[in-house]
Length: 140
Image 1 (tube, helix red, strand yellow):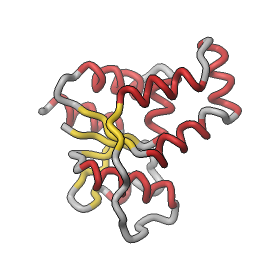
Image 2 (cartoon, rainbow, N blue to C red):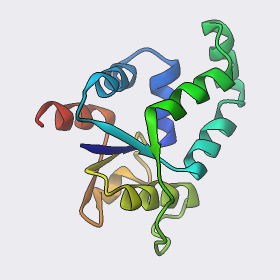
Image 3 (cartoon, one colour):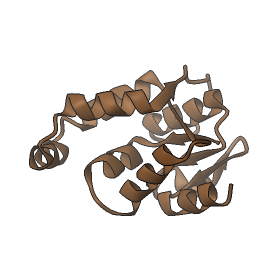
């Protein structure tokens, strides 16, 4: 199974306890689940990790942004995003969609309830919340 995670899911899952963190642990332990990302998504994560709240959380966890980013990069397969017609009002969301298309993803996992989740799917690829994705993985 191939999954592409939106940056908000990655950040939440890596730094804060809760359902998204448990989802990431499950995915990383599942031998048939493979995470895919792209250089633009990795760059976005690197940028987000330098913002105020993540920096405070990293300090509390005694982790560096570099270590967290390196760990995530080791966990994913990188692809070059496909060329797509802009779909969203947020170009960052289009990168998620283009990465999923290039990865031939089985699902996109996003916490973006304003832009991505309302699409429901993109070119046949379902767009799921972390809770929906947990069920999706469990059923396969």
